[in-house]
Every structure is written in structure tokens, then in C-alpha cells.
Length: 217
Image 1 (spheres, one colour):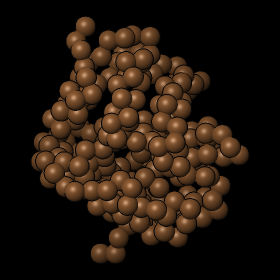
Image 2: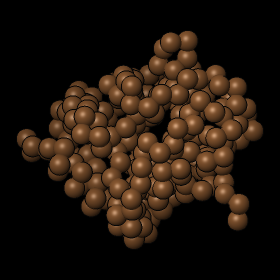
Image 3: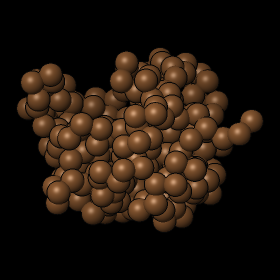
Image 4: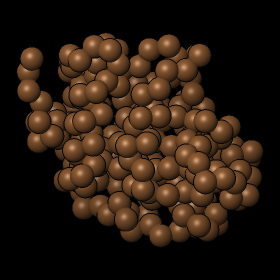
């Protein structure tokens, strides 16, 4: 079995690849380099009127990096609509180590004192690589994404990678991007100076939406 360390994992992201498992029960990992990726242009997140209202109502208490293990554990859970998952024990351990190093973050939506939804991803320079998201309460993961985009825009990030396109993220503004185009954008994003903690407005919907909504042209 090939040993993958956190440092090797970060080097892989810098090269445009990332690991996955066939299932939670399979301890093996393999490298993935998609020919087409999902990509969120940070200045063009699509926030529907209903999602804006949800953000403004403060239904969820948004927290950052307070329960990373809980978020990745929830992302790994099997659900009726998803009976298998690519997040196995090695993935959880590796990304937990990245989190301890400050290179992996969780954005969490809490409701009535319980983790209701959220997402996690890897940060290198001005690039954020979204890994997975989950929802236990309707709208929780979408609100977490809006808060993430606000945080990335405020902090000077240049890229939000979603790895694979799907219908769900397409409704939020993700676009397909070919591997060659992604690799052309990646070096500048990796080298950019960005601050994940510059945004301090998670408790202010007006600040969140100011940074998350499309910029004026």
C-alpha cells in the first residue's frame, strides 16, 4: 500500500490531482485527475431569492473549524440517496491531519445546537479545493457555501474548485472547466496571498451577501 502523507497530499493538489477511495469499506486510495472539473467563479455565485432569504433569516449559526471531524464524518455517512461514499478511514485521517496543520477547513451550519450541514476543503495560497458537503436540515449546506464564498472573496482568494460537476452545484453557479484551462489558472491561484480568516461577518447577513453576491461589472 502506497504511503500518502499530508505533505504528499498537498503536493498532489498543487499538481491538480487528489485522492479518492472506491468506497468507505475499501482502504485503498487512487489518484484522480478529471478531464473536466467543477469550478465556481468567485464573483458569480448564484444565490436565489429563497437562498438570500434563508441567509438573512439567520436560521443557521455558521461556525468555522469548530467540528472538522464532525463535518467529514457527516460527509462520509451513507444516506438513502447515496448508499456508498468515497470517504474512507484513510481519507478521514489524512484530511484531519491537514486540518491540524491549518491547510484544511470546515464551514459548519448549526441549528438548535446540532450540526445541520456544512462542507470542508483544502486551502493552498489563494486556492480553495472543495471536497464534500452534507445537509441534515434543508438549505444548510447551501448557506454554508454562501458563507464560504463570502470568506474567500473577502480574503483575496482566486479559485474555488469543486472537483466534479453535478446538477446540484450547477444551480449554485458552478461551471465546467476543462483540465487544460484549470491547470492554466492553478499556478497564479496557488501563489496568491490570501487570508481565510479575514472575513469576520458570519453573524451579519448583510456582510455575507455583500461578499457572496456577484460583483458589479
